[in-house]
Image (tube, rainbow, N blue to C red):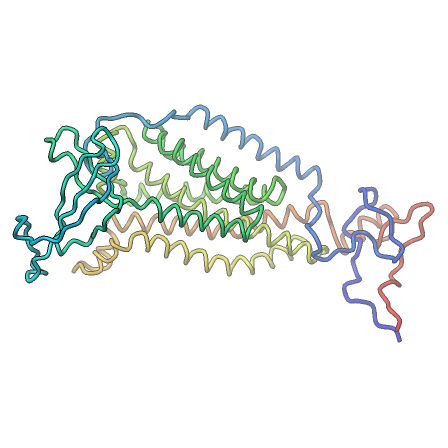
Length: 462
């Protein structure tokens, strides 16, 4: 008994013009073009690749020129102030801990622990610098949140102009080993799951961190325009990360174009609303210290640069996902035109928008959680709190970045649908093109000695 023809038999071989290097029809009657999600979509035409290259190659060249011209050659020097992160530090180690009475060491007691008189006397050894091997003592009171253990590494604040007995004090604990171990676990997880892609992702991460620390930050400290530095550095990070992780191809190039357009929108919106809301960017002790050390720095520009760089990572994720989705949709349905691909891609993109925007807002909220806790107990109204510069900065940062993310979905999806559909028509469009040349609308055009392919091989007899 005969089975009806398979429902996917229509349209096979319609997506390829003759003479493009495809093999002839094989003995079982299937054209070589008979594929359904068994591999990547064939590359776009040579003409479209030239068009994409004509846009991206000059842009990449401009980024390279910008890196060369603005390369700072290291952060500028300055006289140490000894304030905050600007103080000199040395490594230290806790070599002894002794329980003592707080009264015996003249340590004041906290009101919350007035009944406790148990203090600790820690002996700290300097482990680096010219005074390596010397020791000093520090009293740990019962109400202190930071506790020490014998052999624990610590970070020492060093004041070279202070008297000999007061030059060192514990400012933090050494977290090098646990952080390095966590980074190692992360790297192993990425490589095990991502394999070669994971390795390339880690390489791109290292390069991105290098551009940030060797170019963006020192260039801003040298007084260069923060927005220009952020655009050049962010573009370099984007090009290296996307092309190294996803390959040099039209799919990645579309994601690059979508990311660039979205970053442009974020830059324009950020500049407008930062000026309109009269945000200065000088809202923390850190920015105050930076401005006092380097008065030529444009702090408002630093705020805008932070908005652009902060949005870059999430934008890469959105644009690559949308581009890949459209490519896979085309692979699953070679006859789909760009309108159908755009509609299907946007259905995926709407789910992506909902999750990504929430992720971005929660990321900013988590970073500003202590600030939000402080304002939650304030007696000022919600609108007054939201209008304060500290909170308004986070609102502008979050909303501008979210608008750029939302806009990147339809923009990147439309670009991907147009590119993946161009020069590779399917279905009725292929029939019209082939019909104009007298070739059959389905299968592979027969040669002088090759019979026309048939569909009988789709039927099976029992």
